[in-house]
Amino acid sequence: MPFTLQEILETIRMVEVEHFDIRTVTLGISLRDCITPDPDELVRRVLDKITRTAARLVPVAREVESELGIPIINQRIAVTPISLVAEAAVAAAGPGTTKQIQVLVRLAEALDRAAREVGVNFIGGYSALVEKGLTRGDEVFLASLSDALAATERLCASVNAASSRAGINMDALRLLAEQIKLTAEKTASTDGSGCARLVVFANMPGDNPFMAGAVHGIGEPEAVLNVGISGPGVVLEAIRRLGPHAPLDQVAETVKRTAFKISRAGELVGREVARRLGVPFGILDLSLAPTPAVGDSVAEILEAIGVDSVGAPGTTAALALLIDAVKKGGAMASAAIGGLSGGFVPVTEDRGMCDGVEKGSLSLEKLEAMTAVCSVGLDMVPVPGDIPTSTLVGILADELSIGVINHKTTAVRIIPVPGKKPGDSVRFGGLLGGGPVMRVSPFGCEVLAQRGGRIPAPLTSLRN
Image (cartoon, rainbow, N blue to C red):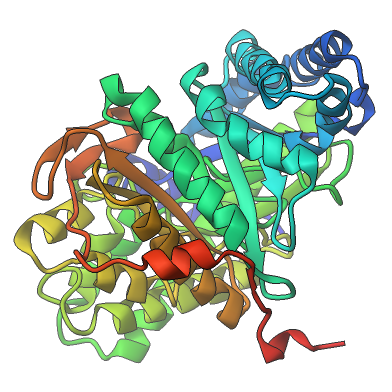
């Protein structure tokens, strides 16, 4: 469908005034043909394939950005879940968890090196799928997470520990909570920032372009280009132009029309980058991705809809309206919607969310309630470094249960900040932002966390 002059002029305004950008173009690369029991050969194959396949990603993205005038903020890579790629090499390393972990850490360092060589800021796919149980290779993989994240800078890790068809793997959550604590300790010099590159999922999609949860799913092609757009500032300005007296159905219609416009522009960019790279265009992720910049905040959108401060009564309803309208507008604009396609409510990456925590309007409990109507979940949440491991298990299980019961993606990216207590500030920099450490309930769940086993799938999983 051709673009009209009005659409072109609107896009120029969105870019110049309203913070519109393409948050990421993410190249998915299959590593299934790299599998070998020889650790040295595995590292060589993985490094070679990524650097060869992604060699032109950054220059091509910059060319398209320059020609179309739409900023492309990040270029990233996602690969096949490494727990699958490395399982043969881990097994061949022989008995002894330490030697097997060393195989995985070497591979993590190779992935990090590949990201540096091709010039991307993150590479995702240091991942495992353990929603129903753990193989021996999975157990070693989970045990490697803190060492792998501490040894790298651009590597992102994700674990699918729950699904609506399988339930919640509580044994995996206990191991993951331990690794989150260890990762924070091993990256204490940067306030536990290694935890910002680790996400625990329910119903993890295999085509998500956003970090830290991007992965090249096992049903994906040899290579594919996925796009994540960003438009909170555009939506915010559209709502502000309506004024405070417009009825909510008019607000929803305005958001829907705005989402249509930014989705059209995002797909145009994605398809052009894919064409020049010679790979298929995959999906367009509709998620509104905020930044720490003023005016580029999902929290500010909710306040423009009509709540005094994010977290106040009415916040969840406003968020539900926003996400539904974004999805409707995006679905009209493109037949290639995928990934998460919801709304991000990260604490440290959204200036308005940080303000809500500082004011006292936004608590961890209210944030959890908000995630019932949007994707991602508890995202970039700094908590005190002395949080008990069992409490982390409970927080993970609570959030993943929302996804399991509602057949949607939810996730947790939580950062126990060493030496910090509620109200202290933390600063990660860049898109990761910073903000206050959030209060966690003093009441725990030690018995629940130690039970282990699996929380069964809900009755609604019986859909065959």
